[in-house]
Length: 291
Length: 337
Figure (cartoon, rainbow over the protein chains, first blue to last red):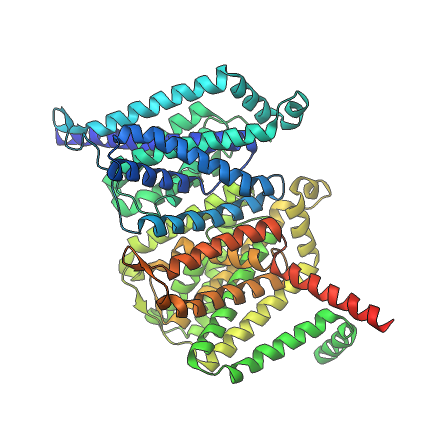
């Protein structure tokens, strides 16, 4: 009996974490797909998003789930600034330069966050803090369920945006052939800014949800970024469904590792899986063979 | 025979400015401890030599187009190997650091086998992940590594001047070896791969083989640096695997000048100097949230500096020095004529 409740908990807990990873990975995947840009500082946007949510929720008393929307908007604005000031200038130059700029951005964001909010651990207190759903042996926090729901809504909206709207089609065109789409009259610089802002907004939402579920400090961004990359690789580059399945599988695998092997294995197991996948299938589990 | 070679080499290269700068900087680094003889300065100079080795190893790998984000793994493997050998088997550290380098190179070879097929960012992630995995393994096998609490490492040579000259000797040897590697056919292949891997493959370069070479050489030097570092700090624990240690050589190489011989040297001098001397002004700065803001301001400044260098000085500070030198020389020539 205890065993089955642990199983349910592991899956739910993994799914809740996985959802946050899915948001981050989808944003990264969009940015990578359209701009061919690798932004290792994406997780810092998550961290900033968490702090923005924290500020709205505690200092101004805004409902935490409304703060998700506010954080999305503000982080998108920050994303626009970052794209215009830094990445646009190195885009198309050497690939390693993007990695260097991202590392610089990590240092900048982390330390600005320390200067603004201090380096102590913080949490966003949700109004449903003590509510949980009883499922026989296991009980699940309502906040996890809400987080999962919010992620589903955001993802549906995103798929609609990419598949059905004009700007979404332009994004798809740019991701396929940027030069040709420029010839078709698409302003690809605008598409780049829009894509980056969209990815940043997803990270902003992920940040507030992260802050509701976990305590956070200015340094929480780095590992989720790397994990989001791992998920993208698991799911296949440029594949949104792949990122979603990859994210959920990843979250559950991580929780299983924590429960069976102990918490120091949380990160290592994930990377081991990643390296094995890369050795066996360099194009990812669901990716297409190519290049 | 050997001395003849050296004499002819000196004769050959006597005219080039590069040679004069090389000799002058070696002489300078040999006599500088007599002018800055307080213990802090010697410590800083030793760290500069140490990080020159470490950053050069990273830079060599980057020259072949492979940007590692987990070089701390190899630094740590070298450090732990040498320290544990001295602790358990009484292997003299001077041999231990080379064994550490060899073990690091052997593991680098295995990781390299995976990495040579990967693109820049995949490689960055695999190496980063490898550092995390190594850290976890070292913590997990604590009974054998004593990594969680750490332990005091054996002395290599007395700290101070002897250690400085040993580190300097190894740094110069590494820099000279890397210079010759970069001048050889192998170095040419590295650069070709860096510029365009597909084209390099097309003109018949076995890219996988050369990328693996770069990995093995680089991880050997990183392991050597790790051994030195552990015996220099006289202490080692699992925190040597921190990502900060992985990013340090990257920042040094990029700020100094990526893919050049002098870049990592200049970068490590700049960064070590900033890390060692700027904290002196921390106490004059105000506190926020009860902590001193100095360290954070320094890192923030470093981040801005790194981004600015990548955007405005893609070839690093060394390219700026080169420009200034050329400018001065052309001015001088104009005056003469």
